[in-house]
Length: 121
Image (cartoon, helix red, strand yellow):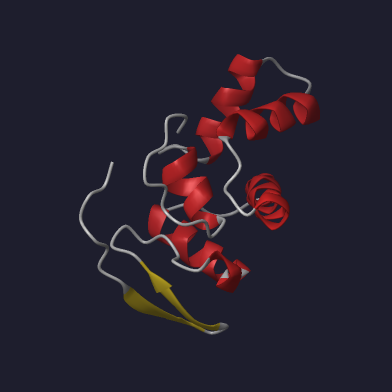
């Protein structure tokens, strides 16, 4: 859990300026753009595919409805249903897409604030 205040910096994108914290998470999720996701993905060495976008878009849709980042178990359930696979295989697919984890990569690319504490990353 973080205890120190964030150092905020401005990130200039063609779509506009967004503020990010020290870890690169956007500070205002409503200012998210697809360019932001592409910027984060490039920094993580990930070329976004339609499978990545499906998860990012699901996180964004859930945020739009509930105003919080969706828990990974809901994303895994969606993958299970879409792919017709077990929970284990859905987790493995998630790790193929986002090898450093749901929170560090998928949540960040989807423009969510960095969680203060997260138990299911």
